[in-house]
Image (cartoon, rainbow, N blue to C red):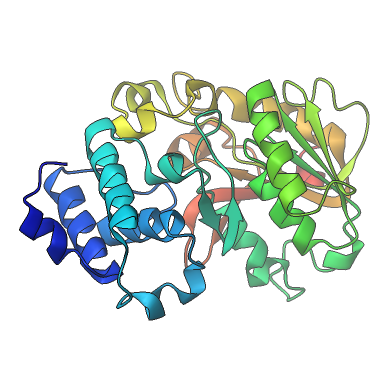
Length: 304
């Protein structure tokens, strides 16, 4: 870290380090969105995890002074974030989704799915507009392309009576998912399955299928930000138009859904292409305060 002694001493509190890190990140034109929204959010994640502070109490500790060792460690991580363009989540091996902590490393993409928020919304709250009216009746859930296992875990917490199958083709991803499932104590309700989508699932039917598959198209893959370039290509690349796996999922999902069930699928910014390719499908685009058409729902009856 090329800093004069005086400048180093000036970074005495957590707030000083947040400001310093955010300035460095903005000066370097870093890209955010991997579990953080902007440079300040990125700095807070990095510093909070380095100091092992609970995120919900971090703001109240901003005036606390740091030790020389802590300051040096944080400065090293700030340097690494700028030099390598690794997402902060990879540097600290942690990301938060819907307030819950998940372990992540470069074997999986940094989870940032809109589906987590949808599960918490009124769309699964039993109201007239709900996709599933009785969450207690959900007995089986399938999470395709589970990655770090975050959506399977959030579903396990949402649907208290459900057994969940979390599927991924990557052994590396399943190893990370296993760590997260164990951390959240859901080993008895979440089964991890190595499978190319439905290939090894068998004839089982589910009340709900969740999937956040690879959906980046060829142009998007060619223009990936440096931060995204550190993530596994397998988890991002959706083929020429981004819909290679979405086509397969829609073609097969109907055989694995129970009556009254449905599929919730995330496609990012691909809504226009999805509507063109699947013009005959009765897709319901989900809109919440945080989601504006990146996810669609299709009922089991419309997939038969």
